[in-house]
Image 1 (cartoon, helix red, strand yellow):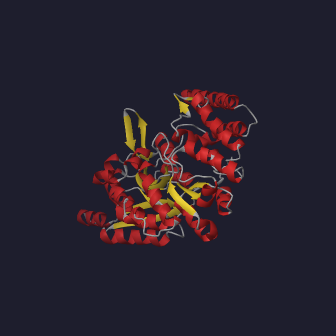
Image 2 (cartoon, one colour):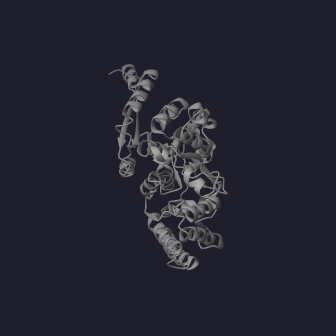
Image 3 (cartoon, one colour):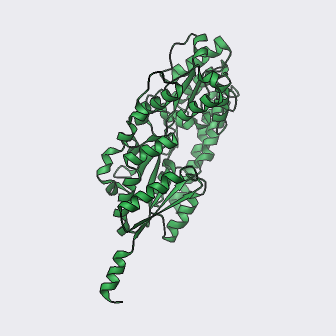
Length: 418
């Protein structure tokens, strides 16, 4: 083959862009196949391959391919996964690849994907979508309890829950106490500070005592209160008329509409209260990251496709199908989310209530800790002991802090030895 023919063949070889999602098939197969078809039609010579894995194996698959030097160009991750991969040097920063699209993403979403030390912080993904909680409430229960509006902060949620219990005998609230670390952070209370657990401070103790007071008054739904996922118990209680308030994504209101029309008819919706941090409840950002070892020559093409994959039009189309919220500002402000039609029911109100909170949504998690889920279980057990009255709140938190700090110290020693 002559040099000219070889060059011609090289130029004719299409760039292959392989991108991974998790748990999108089969529901979103038409969406992604159409998206790929349109991109290839508008970019002759570029071949796009979509691969979907179950959410629980995508991380293992990704590490294997990165180590082998054959990673996909883009991969769906949530923020805690991305933070861990970035710390381990397994992701490529995308600051330069965002290009002129950068100002179009909601600032909160880019903040969620900015990792690193004070002197070296980078963005590690193209935001795609997130979700956020709304507060659905039973107006009949509220009226019986003498409550005229939705709560405006956590203190009012707990106050209203105690009032509902006292005046109706029903539970008012079912917080996800297995995620107590996220609630603490939303309330401006650090879980770890300077490498040490600090959740036994007077402010932390006061928060757990408020929960305990509400629990003892019957204001908290006791069904699965400390379970890893207490949402099924919470929505079942709400649909059964046994719970005054439900903190959940807007999709939950649609479930109430389909499963319990009598309860839906007396349901109203409001944005979930922001914490003193200004952070909304229920944020969980999904994005596309660029793994380490992607061929540097391919990066401009990867950036172009990633910007297309997450542009306003595509985010809006996906969000409408998936009942989530776009991470692009223009798409997030689309009338589909922001307009409440006259005579709207709770399901339509829930969509706009979530849209109000979306710019304030952040993924709340504790970064940089090995075996964090194990540590959190010690925290949840301590909170359960304090809330249910089995142990003094301060004593229970002190014991959990001691366990955490022993393990955190051991982790630091192990890392120093490596």
